[in-house]
Length: 172
Image (tube, rainbow, N blue to C red):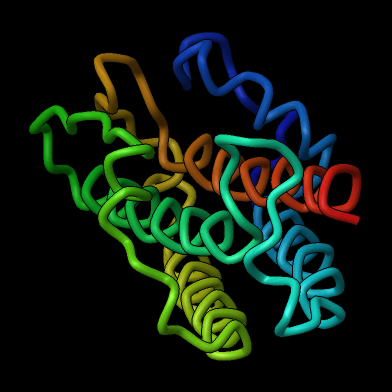
């Protein structure tokens, strides 16, 4: 299965280059598994009384950030499926802050959210396992830029690596 080093110029919008770089030279399935493991290793040790912690004013809490990760994974997995199945309709971007404002995590148990992430990631892995090499190479338009299915897989992984790093560095 494809590795990040297989990506060609123009397979993803430059906006996502940092996420792809977070992956290193891994295969898609390895990246999906390893990024999930890194995040869940952190989440397992977050005490319930700490989920509302934020490292600076105006930043998301630990729980809000996890909801953002879950929402983003669902959106990007849907984008991958859309393109893999040959749908040529350009897909719009989404405003993460608008989602965060509406998503009320105050009544949710953090453990349930952690399980939700695991379930969503399991579905993402199963989806990417179902793609053929031709599916992975298929191109579409996302947020007014190019996107191959395989690039989306690396973006999903890189996004989770990004947030796992933030959790470790900023939320402790």
